[in-house]
Length: 304
Image (cartoon, rainbow, N blue to C red; front, side):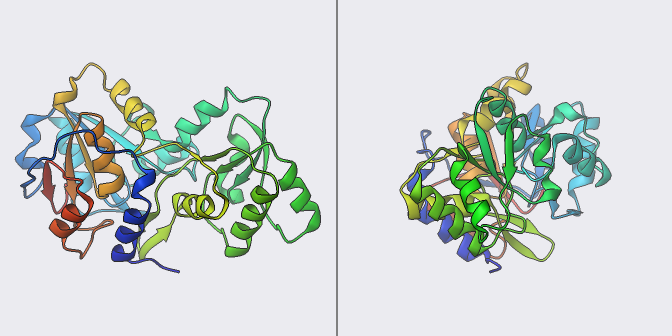
């Protein structure tokens, strides 16, 4: 299935009860043509990646130039991504190759967050949702990747795992999903989700991400999961810590998704800007989506 922006928005609305409650007062968004109009108000810019800086492996038209411009003005730029399929150094290299002049300390990924948490869980043996290309063996944990769950030996191996890590949805299938659900119904165990996104903007549309399969799993098993990444506090606490010399009032979160970027930014006390031309809300009535979700950004613009 290739989801549409309308489908994705409605899917986020259906799982809204599992997301953090909005704790800040409703704002009145201001329309801006781009970040240039408000760049003097902020010293630190926290960018979502997919739908803001890039779509899949392609940089978005004005994003590279804006990133360079902000840094030439002495502004601090940080990428806060829910990406978990690639190791940190590979992700930094990707964005540098796309033209974004970042150093490793300018990128926080949800994979980095879950990797830090795994380092304190040395005794568990993890069954990991990930293809070989995700290099799950680079994570600081014992475990194996989930492959052919139709084979009896692998079903037993999965049942004997201490916990589940949903790292990457590349190559994931309905059969693998059902096998995981069946295993967790036979023996409930902790489930960690390294990417809370339901979808991600790619070159040819939206892809389903681990968050989608995690909520499907929760519906089917009744289990709770632990999420790492936006809109949850672990992501925004890490971003604010990385930009700690800058007051929160001088930070701006820029994202394309109301239920992750904007919700999480607002709950962290950070000003927010919703971009609409390329990401999760492309082609939708943005004001209607804001009214339906009651998640209101401070600024709205087509792109950065």
